[in-house]
Length: 153
Image (cartoon, rainbow, N blue to C red):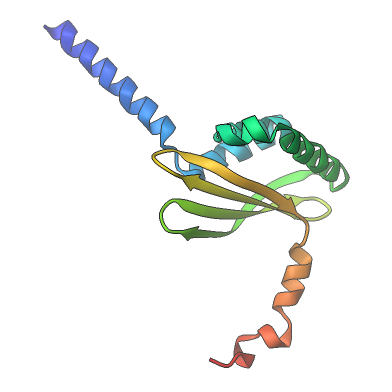
């Protein structure tokens, strides 16, 4: 009887482990992305994050490959990678979330934007973008008409 309890316990632990993997929150998916990005590079990191959404893989392979090529081309000229910082997190309801990150390179920062969607019980990458517009946006935010004291409520 003791052996039967061990087997049942083992099955329960496996079930909970598999459920936890399938229900990973976007933060964990992003953390894994950046670990792979740091250790293995752009291709492996993007393959991993895009693998969360079978629809993207089936319909957008050429687009994914294009993102990889363009991003690798950019990072070859901006120097060494030093890490990342979260810029913002926004959501619409409980099932649609955006995460924006500052990616620190020697020459200049770039921004990665991840959007995740959970239709049932699994988070999937809905969209991934990168851009270099941070300086323009920072300057725009400092314009007089954007300052709090100049906004009529």
